[in-house]
Picture 1 (cartoon, each protein chain N blue to C red):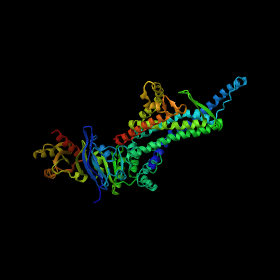
Picture 2: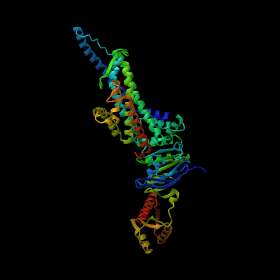
Picture 3: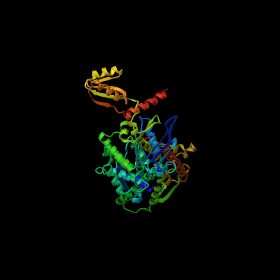
Length: 285
Length: 312
């Protein structure tokens, strides 16, 4: 099994695009850091003027690396999801498209093992993108804004309810990071399922990205409809993004525990569909 | 008794109400090149895909070197190498990387030396570190054979292996196969190119509409039934006189091909009699050509018979 995952890993990195996505993330980080730096100079300048007036007692906000991570880096995680969807969708459908799936499946390994090795490999790649983003984000952030600021207290909440809570920049980041992971894995799993079902490369990537975009739009619409239709909260879309729970403990009567449970159920369903259909399929590509 | 390299028992495949493959059985011995012959759409590829379990079987059993593919899938598959349809590779990797990739998937470890040896066998030493997208079809075909042979299989299965190869490539390919068979590896080839099967195989079966309708070895196939009519061409000094003489023998289906040659349909044993008659009447015969019945003729004959039977 380790050998199979190694094979898949090598194949992912035999494609130039796999490096390009990593490089793009770093480029986005630089752009983000520049923009964020500029923004603070402007705001900082304005604040100093106010302070000179003597009419404001606001202490001057200095961005820190953790502040940068919380705002810019977490924003760029959308690109991690996007690139993951592309790589995941491509992974299986390319094997069908190029006909290499035939050569892959006539080896002394059961089909589900080969599929599982692919699933592990693409999720590992996805994690690599995410870890790369955070690591480079930390380095670039430290260069631009200096280290420190982990324990700086911030106030969050009030987005979906009146309740506010106090946390630290570092704590907020770590929590968001952890809450981001299940959504990423689930979206990867959906893309993986779609590419196994469709076999067609363009269709799989297209539908994968479509699902990604539509889910963020739909979840907004669903959230509005939640009041009227109770069963809406059992759909996948309002539950795909756990990071909203870092601001509020309850959103529309749903909690992080509830959403996570719904995700696990859908996850199991998608995995069963994927592996069952792959196991039973006649390979005629 | 030694196991046959491949044994297929009552293989069948049903899609909807249609039986694509219907009760096909055959055995291939070690060191034998075996042909699976049939027109396009006869079910050859389906049979091959069922053997390598890319397609589920509706019924039937497959044994590879005596190992049942159902009860011991991994062990059976480890003794099999195949190219299914076109030799497809990861084009963005080099030939060597592709081989390494498949080598890692073998149950028995494959050494560096083994890979080098195989690369040498298929004559790809100069191109093996280039990306596969730069390869010609012939080179990909050879890489396909290399990939199928890496793990020392008992049998290799090649689906339409000469598709798209030029005559030179086909000849080389044929020699490669013979070398392999001499080493004791069984080879299963499918083709609709009858002349190809004839040149390459020791034994063949004909598949038509999913059924095995004929089975023969190439050598028996060559001594065609004695009583059958053959095309015989006599090269003579005067066609006109020869035709007249034959008319006297009440043989009328003589075709004048040129001033010096005539063609007629004769059973084998009649040829000598005709020759004697012509010579007796002072016709100089410089050549007698009996057109050998090719596999192609037999194939068309057999499939036609089959069709007539179906009509009746």
